[in-house]
Length: 264
Length: 295
Ligand SMILES: Nc1ncnc2c1ncn2[C@@H]1O[C@H](COP(=O)(O)OP(=O)(O)O)[C@@H](O)[C@H]1O
Ligand SMILES: [Mg+2]
Image (tube, each protein chain N blue to C red):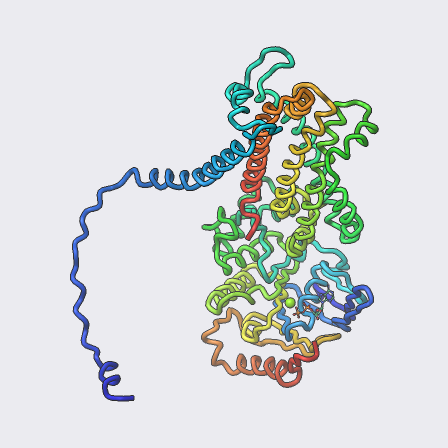
């Protein structure tokens, strides 16, 4: 079943006299419940692609269909977890999620149901203990957990994650990857996650979308990761199919599409 | 590497532990925090007090000469000390203490500045949302901002015909520019991330204003309001030259016309003190309201 369909998508930014052809002819189909990682060198247009799916940026040519409907504006059915958490600093953790829940379920859930739903989502990312804290009072990893809870609380059709763990230390990152895998297996959400970490991509994804370098970047290759779930990072490390998948991505990134600094 | 350094490196014998000295039991010093606070108060109050005394002395000496146009501080105290001592006397409808006059003027400022705050924040919010409007309006505001309150008087009178609303308009028009300019700058500075969150949640304009814009731009808005309240208090003399009556601004104008210089000096002290309190008050509200905005 085709859930999310991206067809002949291209994006050109026009800024006065300057034009930047960032993405060109992107074609991708994602099934319901699938976990897709997008990997590529910095500046190739990963965030641009995600913002197009989110509806935060307008499509230049081509189109995006989600569940049979064209995507042309942002909405809570495509919740985004941003790279730098983007929690509102003047609201408590609870109120940050409440803002989203009130907006999305204001008419369909009672006040008590909404409260339960907020706490349920905080529980899911193990953050209910910090409900009354402000974002400044919790660690970077915790903020990212709350960002994920806020996105999940919108009950989106697709969860979009833009390098959510890029700024975290390796240990925290591993914890959060496990949390995301756990949520995915429990709720079966459709997820698209941008990353520049090869291990993260292989560990989490059903398919890895590898992007060529910009300008006019496109999808170079799509790798299906055949590893059974639940996945365990320690057990996987020595498995030949894991190593093979990892090597395929590395080859793509560092042999065929080396990052050329001067091309910027 | 010579032998001595090697030896030193290999010297792993444990050092004798430092002798354990029993600390004398500490008597709980309950007065300590108060003493600390008292010292902080002295540190804060003493220097300006010394400067004040020095300035008053210079003034006293400078103004004591024959034919000096300015009264000395001692003369001011003799002439008008009662104005200081009794801020709230009432001897007749026109003859009331300076405390009452300040309150009358504050009421006027309350209306003028209140209006400037509401209109200024709303206008700033609209203009700050668009880069084009910002480019169009900002230079105009920067120019209007520098027009002194007195210069608005005739325009204001011509527009309103009536002295009451004219006075409030003078205060309003003096105070509004920094509010608009700062609010617009604050709105421009809202991080794209917050706008994206609002877009994903499909917040409408009103929700965006209250839930994102006001809290995100609060530090900017309040620095604008703080400048604005200062300016509106500055405009009080000009405004009350129009209205007459019992305000502190008109008191100065009236005292000048009847050459009561000592009274003017006391009134200046009242105005300065009130302005200082207003400034601190808005600053304090701003700190409370925008607590947590900056991360
Ligand atoms: N609003 C914009 N206007 C012009 N160019 C942009 C804009 N947003 C992104 N770009 C350009 O698009 C390219 C891809 O950016 P981005 O999608 O952020 O890359 P990535 O997320 O893969 O690091 C960059 O060269 C960037 O300069
Ligand atoms: Mg990016």
